[in-house]
Image (cartoon, rainbow, N blue to C red; front, side, top):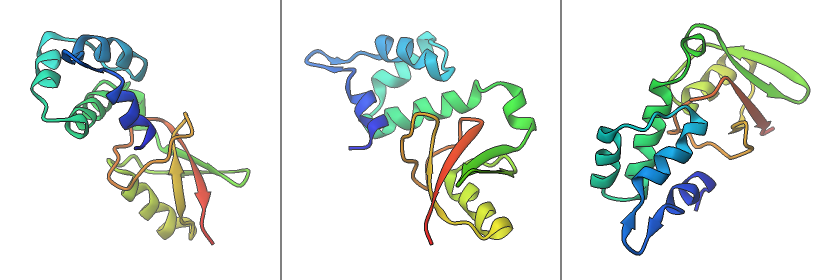
Length: 130
């Protein structure tokens, strides 16, 4: 289980999913807690669906500066800038096309990101694949 999924699962209790505690902790990712979001998490079918909701809300509440400037990708002591995109797959495509770099992306918490993951931070780390 990926670390971020494991984080979401920590809010599963014998009485059900603790949406309020989850949203309170998600404030660290810029997610605001509202009654509508609590209801959405309560109605979600499972951990994967809750994770997608949380990622979407984090992307929505990201500071506007994040949407204006380029995304920074660090690798092998170098810094690369790529345009703002929605998914990690698009980031990797820009790195391949613009810099002939390919590899695995990690966020600021050193969690591996998959292609379908949304880009919700300003800086990523690339572990290149030869």
